[in-house]
Every structure is written in structure tokens, then in C-alpha cells.
Image (cartoon, rainbow, N blue to C red; front, side):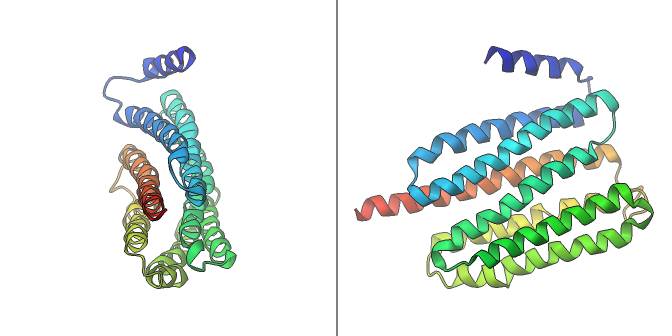
Length: 248
């Protein structure tokens, strides 16, 4: 604990007064670290299969917390957006968020095809976005369109496709409510990422939003999306565990 406190003090010492982006990097990392501890400790309070869901939720926030520590340091040192670090974070955490859909629907007939389809399109979305934002900046619009295909497929799956049908056919109002909340995270929460992409030089929103503004939005949005996603899973896990205990 002393080592963590010393590390935190060093990080804070590097932040300049009024550096709201830097502070949200720090707050985001600590919030997601705290969420990780919470999810891991709560695994012992839920029924067997739900422990896996909480484990995945904890892994998502843990990976994000580690990356946010590095991104905060990168920002404090260079004063530029840590684009590559963000994509490394996303390419690990976003597919895991797709895994969560499979895990909660597995009891209602979800096949591995759903899992691999959502993981594939999430990786497609992120790889194309990274190429358009870094390697092929002059063709960012093209790569943005390619990336959007992946997002559209995932959006269709959770709002009208296979995942949605499984949730609707479950006759479980608690699962349906949790699934709908997660679907809103995909629709609204994830929408900040294409908006940020369009704000890069040459994009449709170029010059409208500054780099600092987008990093601030990303930092807040990431924390809400990842912690919120996990809390929905946690709420469902506790609810279903309580039902099983009551029936025993």
C-alpha cells in the first residue's frame, strides 16, 4: 500500500494546475482500480457461473486501470494524446465486453458463434480505426467507414440480431432489463469513440473539438462505460444468486 501511495504521489506531482485532462486520467485510473478490487472481492458472493462474468468485468477495469496509469504519465510528459495506448487498451477491453454478452446469454442458448462474431467485429472496428487514425491519416475517412461496419454489426446484434432474440426469448425480465441497459451502453456510450475519431485532422468534426476536449470526454466516457458495464453485470449476478438461494 505504501508503494501504491508513493506512486500516486509521484504521478500527482507531475500534473500541472488546471490540467483537467491529466486529472481525469488519474481519477479514471484510480476509479477503475477500485472497481477491479470490488468485482474481484464480490466474486465470492455470487453463484458459480456468475463468478466468470464478474471475473471478466474485473479484468476489463484492471486492464483499463493499468493503461490509464501509463496514459496519464504519457500525457504529463508529452502533452499529447496517447492514441496508441488507448487502442491497446480498447483492443483488449472491448472484445471482453462482447464476451459479457455471450456469458449472460449462454444459459439461454447462446452458441460460440455469437461470441466469436462479436469479438471479430469488435477487433475489426478497432484495427481499422487505429489504421485510419495513425498509419493512413490521409485516408482516415475511408478507414473510418470500414471501422463503422464493425460497430454497425455489433449494434445490430444487440438491438435486433441474434443476441437480442436470445434475450427476448429468455422470459427472464431481470436478464432482459440488464441486457437492454448493456445495449444502451453500446449505442450511447460507445458513440463517443466515432465522434472522437471524426474530430481528428481531416475528419468531419476536425477543428470543432480540440484534442484536449476529446481526451477529457474519452477519459470520462471510458470510466462510465467500463465501470457501468461491470455494475450492470454485478447487479444481475447478485439478483440471480439471490433467486437461487431463495429457491433452495
